[in-house]
Amino acid sequence: MRFGHVLSWFDRRQRSRSVLGFPLAVWLKYSEDQGRYLGAIVTYYAFFSLFPLLLVAATVLGFVLRGDPSLQRSVGRSVLGTFPIVGHDLRVHALTGNGVALGVGLTLALWAGNRVFIAAGSVMDHIWGIPPRRQPGFVGARLRALLLGVVLGSGAVGTSALNAFGTVGPGHGLLWRIGSFALSTAANIALFWLAFRLLTADQVSWRQLRGGAVLAALAWELLLAGGSLYVHHVVAAASNTYGTFAGVIGLLSFIYLSVQTTLLAAETNVVATRRLWPRSLPFADGGPTTDGDRSALELREAAVGGASPASAVANPQPSSRGAGRTGERDEAGRT
Image (cartoon, rainbow, N blue to C red; front, side, top):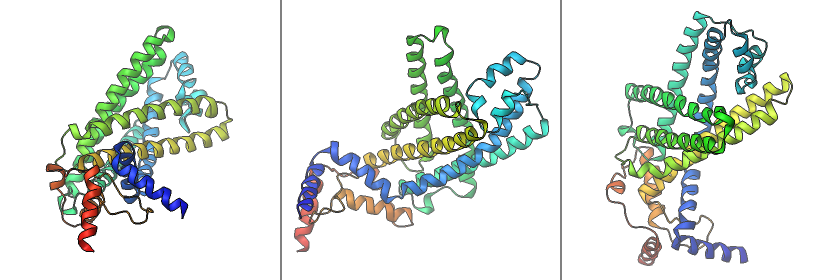
C-alpha cells in the first residue's frame, strides 16, 4: 500500500515537471512500440550485411597492400588487424586481390545494405504512426533505401576519416584530438539529422528532428570510444580463437547498441513533435489519463491502418500541466 502511495506521488510530480515527464514519455513510447524487437530486426540485417563488406574490404586491401611489406605491417597492427576473418590474413600478409570476389562482394553488400535501410524505414514509419496507405510502396521503399545507402555510406566514410585524424595527428596533441572530435561530432549530427529526415515519411520539419540527431550523434561517439577500448584491451590481447569470438560478440553488441540508441533518439523526436507528454504512470492507481496517453494510442492505431493523426503535427495540442487537468475533467464527465 505504501509503495502505491509513493508511485502515485511520483506520477503527480512527473506530470507537472517536464524534466521527469519527458524522459518517462520517451521510454513508454519506446516500450509500447516494442523497441527492442524493432531494433533486433535492424541489427540482424546490419550484421548480415557486414560479411559482404568484409569480402570487399579483404579484396581491396589485397590490391592496395600488394608489394608493400611496410604498409602491410602497419595495417596489420591497426584495428583492422583484430577484425574477424580479415585480421589474421593481414597479420600474415596473405591477402590477395581478386576481381571476381570484389564484384560478388559489392553486389551482395548492395543487396544486404538495401535490406538494412528498408528495415530502418519500416521501423521509422511504425514509430511515427504512418498508416500503411501513406508508406512508400515496393519501388519507393527500395529507392529510398538506395538513396540512404549512397548518402549515409559516403557520410560514414567521411566521419570515420575525421575520427582517424584524432590518432594520426602530429604528436597526438590535445588540441588536435579535441578538434577532430568536434568535427566528427558535428559531421555525425548532420548525418543523423539527414537520416532522420529521409527516413521520416511524414510532414515534419528539420527543426523538429534536431534534438534527436544531437542525442544520436553523442551516443554514437560514446559507443565508438567504448568500442575502441574493447578492441585494444580485450580483442587484441586474446588468442586467435578467442579473439575471433570476442570480435564477433563485440561487433554484434556494438551494432545492437547503436541501433537501440538511434531508435531512442528517434522516439525523442516523436514524443517532442507529437506532444506525447506527460503520460500517466502505468502502475499508478487512480491516475486519470492524459492527452499524451490518448495521442500515443492514436499513433499506435494509425500505424496498423487506423486514422492518421496528421493534425497532431500541424496543430500540436498543449501538454504539460494542462494534460492532467484535461484527463480529470474527462473522468469527472464520465462519472
